[in-house]
Image 1 (spheres, helix red, strand yellow):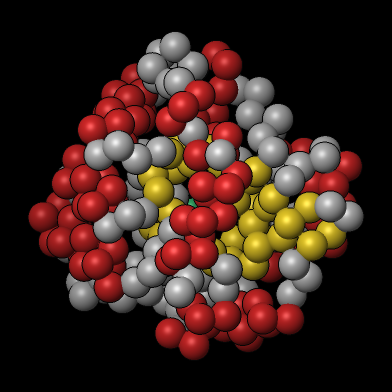
Image 2 (spheres, helix red, strand yellow):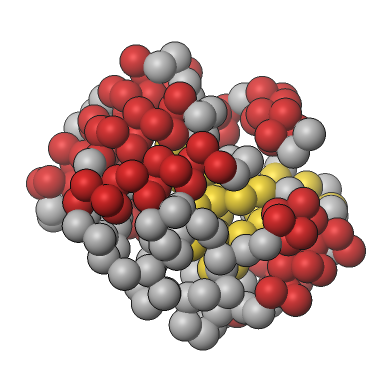
Length: 239
Ligand SMILES: [Zn+2]
Ligand SMILES: [Zn+2]
C-alpha cells in the first residue's frame, strides 16, 4: 500500500466514481499519510469546470490524519504548450500534473512538434508531475520529453493504472525501464501513483511486486518513501 498517492480522480472528472469525501475517508481507513485529488483539466470532455479548480484555496487540507492536496491533471492543448488551466487556477492549486489526453482541443502535430509542445509546456509552468509518460494520446520523442522533465525538475510518474492496463505489452516495459534509467541518470527520484478512478484503487500498489525486478526498481529512487523531501519539492515549486 502506498502511504502517499498524489494522483486520484473524483467524480468531478466525469468518469471516476468517488466524491472527495469518499476519497479522503478511504485514504484515512487505509492509514495513508498524504493524497492529492487531481481531476482532469476542464478541456477534457466531461471533466470539471474551471470553478471546481478555483475552489482549491478553500478545500480541506487534512482529513483524519491524512494530508490532502488539491490539484489538477491538466492537459496540454496546443503547439505553444499551453495548459487548459489559467494562471489564477495554478496559483490556487497545491499540485499540478500534466499530460495530453483524448478528447481535448489538442490537434496531433506529428511526433516532432508534439515533442516541442510538451517541452515548451514543461519550461513554462510550475509543473510537479509528468503523469503516465508511457501512456500517451499522441506520439512524441519519449527520451527527449523525459529528459526535459528531469531538467525542469518535474517528477516522472510510475503510473499503476497504466502499468496494469498494458501488462502484456512489452513495449510499455521498455519505456518504463527507460524512464527509470533517465531519472537515475539525472539523479532524480520518480513518483508512484495509483491514478485511481475507483475507491479500491487508491494507494493500491499490489501490482508492483510482479514487475519490480523487470523494471529494475529500487526503494531509494521512489520519492513516496521520502515524505519530507517530497514536501520540500512541492513547496519549492509553489513559491
Ligand atoms: Zn491521465
Ligand atoms: Zn489521471
